[in-house]
Image 1 (tube, rainbow, N blue to C red):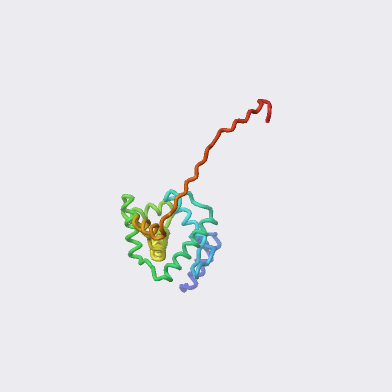
Image 2 (cartoon, rainbow, N blue to C red; image 1 turned 90 degrees about the horizontal axis):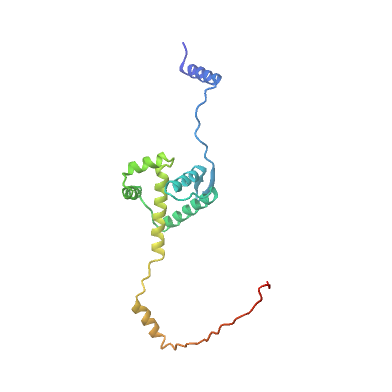
Length: 181
């Protein structure tokens, strides 16, 4: 009677002899490490597909990699400043995008999947964009300058002497024979 280990060995041997191929997952090569976070060939390919799906002309692999590196750096800076976005908030943002396009989140995820884009790729982009916007708003708050503020600043500097310069323009006509260059 065959034991389980012998049976598995024989099965593996038969499969090897018959040349049965077992599908292997596509290899992912790490292209860059940003603050301990890898960016792989899969990430670059997904971003290019995503940009194509949302209607933008996808940049080349090098430009896409640079964009992903910038995105990771921006998210890291925002995280250091204490700005993060929960998965629940990202899901709400994803649902908002889906509803604006007349779909449910599940339909949007399925549509992305049909185009070869993992929905998580889009969610990661949404998260990064949103966190960066929060960071920029905190670092550089909006400045509202009213007309009265401008007038008050001008009045503080005292009266301004306006000087007008008048020019007279006269036409100058050059007569050139037709045969000249």
